[in-house]
Image (tube, rainbow, N blue to C red; front, side):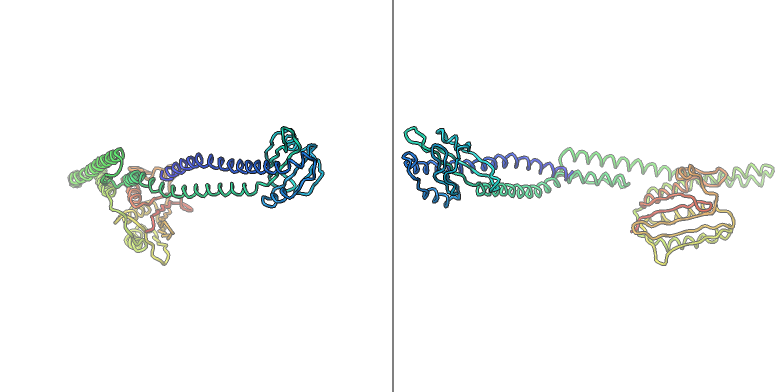
Length: 450
């Protein structure tokens, strides 16, 4: 918006300059040409008076006055008799017939003739003035002055360049002043944009309105703050409800499971049904724990710099016993340098635990789970590959949805990958599921470098 405002200022300024300077330049050009023409007409009239007697009495004309004038002004002077034959010519073309020249023909009729024409020989524009040489109403001949317009043209060009220079200076000054004005006008809008961006990123902390901003923008900022406060309150209520409900459900579920286990000893004949009921209570308890964990995840802290290599190596060591118990090979592939990333505190541990747990559930005995760390310029990646059956394309598209499970027979709540996705989004990262070769699934985590 700042650039648009600045462009509008410069456009208006340019239009004003054109409206002012263009007529001024045209007026100056016309005035210089008119001045040159008037001066030439005056000089031609004076010279015509000098040659009036010699033409009237048919005496030889003295070329000295014409030559002196030609030397002073660099003009060509031609004096012709009543038949259009030159009697004086500063170019020394005596007895040449000039009667065919339009300006000479007009002057011999007793009228003045002025104008400009292009000389191909001299490759320049020429101004000509032709006046009759007459006395007592009788025309005895004509006198023509021809001179170049280079000097006038040069003055006109200098005037044009001066106007252009003034316009450039004014536009430059206007650009600086306009930039300052545009920035001051758009500053409240940029502030609102930054606030909206912060709100969209999850930071709903209200800001103090700018007292110097226009009333409409202040009202808009107040409304945005009210909206953010309301959203923050609703989200906090939702999180509190999930956490409270999870806490409240854990106690009766634990008690229910204990009673069902006690009933196994009292009713051996119903052991299968009781086992199924205990499994369901176990699944419900796990669901409650995942809901509580998800609620805590959505209220995570800002990201911090974490040594991924050291952290992942520790988690691999923790899961090594599980891998050996399941007869699965757990491998870590990392470069010699430590890889750092920006993640929420404690978040990457939950991500790794969830993904490794899923990998061990899917991987058959004798297969391997490989964790690979890649150091990038702007992003760090962690890939966890298993040798299990993998997922179809449709399943991969839905795997991050809450409560989704690929197979109801597989234990789990369907919240593991949803928790992983939530943690990664809070850290500015992402997760992508792809096929492993020859079989299995690869979960690739991308995290921003610090």
